[in-house]
Image 1 (tube, rainbow, N blue to C red):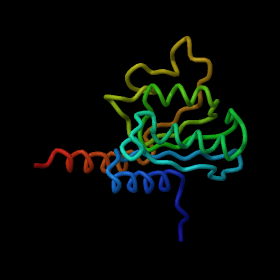
Image 2: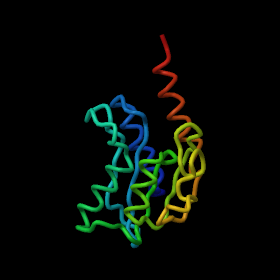
Image 3: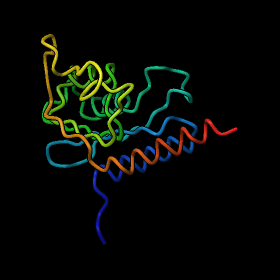
Length: 151
């Protein structure tokens, strides 16, 4: 039986976020040996905190787990292109590689919008790989928002 990949795990966590009424976004931090150090999902509604994006929570949990303020050599897997706030956190944490599924035309800041990592003032740019299992993440987001718009 095929073992789930990192993005499979992230999308499963995003489904749990949707089941809890959150925008279905999740993230995982993976160390240089391929071990998942932290997985988190959006918790903005449940925690009543606009900064509780999956990426921020996963980065915080990973730093706590390894006891370091930076995550040099670690990778971040996310179900949706990170926003500007999360891109800033990724840069500050010194993430080595960023993998994401769906592009976020409205709120993304990596390949969309402000393209944070291309700014001259950005002090750290991870290697970026977008579009991994994008269809699965997009379907999850589309279904979630369609359910919210339904009468």
